[in-house]
Length: 174
Image 1 (cartoon, rainbow, N blue to C red):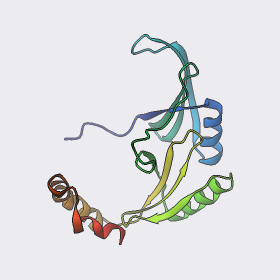
Image 2: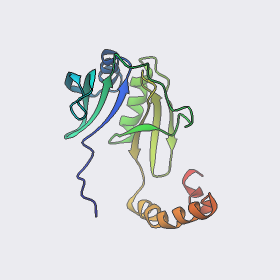
Image 3: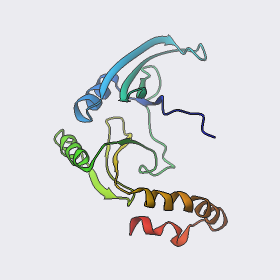
Image 4: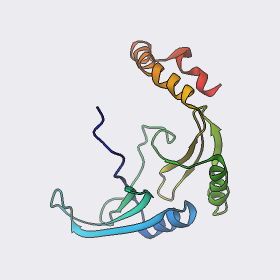
């Protein structure tokens, strides 16, 4: 039983709050809606000054970043390939996806795609903090989504048993 009603916010670290605001407003096209800055962490009471910035993804759903000026420079998880950890945003249609690609590239940002994932099409880029971003549009009908949902238990079972799903999931990227 799902008790959640959506994503309230996801928070990540950034190197520079202003640079991050400029990127997400000018390049991605999000609205910058809020900043919180304190000299201590409310949940732990630790002294650690921060700037916490928020962008609206959709009504009631936000992407947030922390600039931590007194902490060592951030890095990425070197044990995980850079394509694994990413933030994926939904766009309403293929036209918006292609227009977004042009908009992002016009700011000198490299964009990969569109990539056809059968269920959806995506483009990928990196923000100035090294976070991988995905913009995706759903392109499959309900019958394909049902096929994927119905296959999920068998795929997980095969993965747990064999470390591969074999042909169970191979059809997605053929």
